[in-house]
Structure formats: structure tokens, C-alpha cells
Image (cartoon, rainbow over all chains, first blue to last red; front, side, top):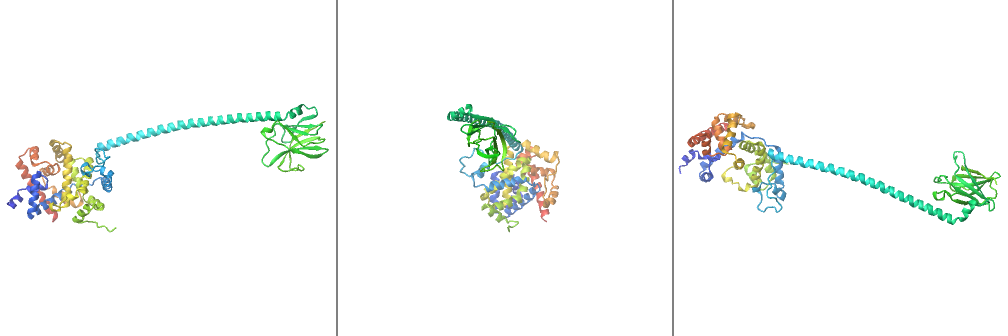
Length: 296
Length: 185
């Protein structure tokens, strides 16, 4: 083989610039391995070509490297395998892999399609979210409504129960105290409606005194429930001397019922006082609420 | 980290074969602009060029065991992968020969844009020297190298005899050789 003729034929340039068909490429490579001078010329030409193509260098967008490094970092995982181009995947395909899993495309149409798809998904998500909020609000309002109604019902039921209880208590107390009923009509008992006193102007109780048994009775109508640490006392005043007639029971259940208090032989004035709990003596700290005069 | 700022060819090859991601990163930093330039020039389409560049580097990473030092330098091998991949894409797009030529004439004759899309500083002189190539010569090289046209196709497209294509091509490449030699000096 006339190697010089071969070199000067221009086939090496054609080889380096990719102009040869495959069979001729193989031939040039075989000859280059055989003849060092051919190899040297080929390498020179390749270097020259490389310098030539470097003239057209364009810095690629930075995201390409980021994506590549991500793919390479995950290449041993099924997910990493899936984002490889088909021809670069391992022979054992991942079972769950879809038929085609192309590398993330950057073409404007693909990107636009993708963007559009994302826009669509985002829009759909927002709509679903808005509907969800609306439905939640609707049901929340509804729930509140039911809750309110439920609470009303509970309150109503409680009221009924309370009323029934009160009624039954009253019935019971009435049944229990047929005697008390008789007291109301008993001509021996003097009933006096008390008057309010000072800052407590309204009459709130009725006081009775049995002229025969000397018993003292009290019916509370609307004395307020005593505050914590205080209680109502009934005191009798006879000849200017106060005497304790007992502590009143003031509860909603006790209203309208006759309370039996300590007997008093000849009470002239009866006073309802509010005093600190435990005080039994002279009403030093007493606040007078009600006053009743007996005129037997 | 005391990592060398440059690697020898052998270190690069060994690094890729041992799946060294740092070496791959270095390789990308060193060569991506040149390879991207090739892809852009082949496809005339920057948007799809990114995908192709990604495929090219993945092929380099995955097929490094197919690289044979005996047959040429690493960069020559990389460049071949790059050109072949890009031209495959160009052909898969069913670009007809006419379209290829249209692109070329658009590039070189009609728009009369400078060939250099982006010049690396150290190639500035070389790029100027490239202007010593006639437009016809550059057109020939572009058609052959970047569009993957065979000499027969070029002859048909440019409507000149095949022999003339071969002669002109040799003249162009010789001219190029001289330019490179001048740069080296």
C-alpha cells in the first residue's frame, strides 16, 4: 500500500469530518492502527477540527448540568433509571416502568405543553380548594346551626326537667305539708307582708306568727340568693331586744314555701338581715333587707 | 478540598470508568460549551439542543467503557458522540435535504450572520483566521460536518459535480489546517 498516496488522497480529512460511510471509517481506523504516520495525521486533523468546533462554543443553560448531576446521582435507583433515555437503560427493565419515559424535555413546545398542563392542574387545584373551602364553610355553618339548635333543645329539656322537678317538689312539699296549707288559712296565724328597707325597697317575703304555738313562719318570694360567705337571718325584736329566729333557706326551690323558724313568744318587729355566715349574735354587721311589723 | 484544577486525559477516563461524579462534573464544565455549540449548529434550535446535550453527556457517562484510547483522544470520542447524536435527531425530525440546505443558506448567505455564535477568548484569533475561508468553503464544511451531508448529497444540493465537491472540500480543509497551524505558533 502506498501510504503517502493514501494520505494525500484526502480520505483522512473526510474521515475526521465525518464524511465517510461506515465501512470506509472502519478501514481508515484499521490503517491508522497499522501506520503510525497515518495515525499522527489523523490526530492532527482531529485536533484541528476540535479547534474549529470550539469556535462555535455556546454556554449551555445551567439547568442542564443540574439535571444531569441529579440523574447521575440517582442512576442506581429505579427512578433514576426511568429518567434515562431508553437506549441507555439497563437490560433488566424496572417492572413498574411505563412503556416510554423520555428524558425531561426542554423543547419550547414540550415546555409550553408542560407549563400549560401545570397551569391547568394548578387552576383545577385552586378550584377544588375553593369548592372545598366553600363546602367546609357551608357544613361548618350548618354544624354550628345544629349545635345551636341542639344546645337550645338541651336547654329546653333542662328547663322542662327543672320545671317538672320544681313542680314535683312543690307537689311533694305540698303533699308533705298539708299542714302548711292549713297554716295559710289558719286564723291563729298572722301573716304580714314585709316591706323593703333602705336600699332594698321591695317587699320580698311574707312572715307569719302563730299566736297559739308562737311559731314563726316565712315565705320567700323574691329575696336574692345570698352571696358566697353570707346568709339571711330572721330576727325578732321584742321590747327593743333583738332575738335570733333562725337562718333562712333561700334557694329557687324554697321560694313560695313556708319555712318554719324559731318560735318567739311576742315578736313585735321581724327583720330579715344579710350577715356573714356563722354569725349568730347581735347583728353588728347585719344589713337589713326586710322589715315586718306584727300588730296582734 | 485539595482537588486538582485540571486532570490529565487518563485521570478523566479513569474517573469516568470508576463512576466519579466529580470528574463528570469537571468534564461537563470543560466541554459542555463546545459540545452545546455543535448541537446548536446542527439543529439550529437552541430549545431542543438542551435535551440533546443532556443525552450526549449521559451517553458519555454510560458508555465510557466503549471508549478505546487506541482510536483517539477522549474529546474526539465525545465530539463524535455529540455530532452523531445531534445529526440523528436532525434526521429523526425528518428534515428533508432541502430544509437542511435552506437552514444553511439562511445561516450563511441570506442573513449573513457571523458564523461565530459565541467565541471563547482563546479562540478569538482563530475565529478571525476562519474568515480566511471563503463562504463557499465554510458552507461546505458546515454541510458536511454539521448537517451530516455526504459529499454526494452536497454535490446534488449545490448542483456541482462530485469531483468538484471533493476538491473544494480538500482545499477548505487544507486551508483550515494552515489556520490551525498558524494559531499553534
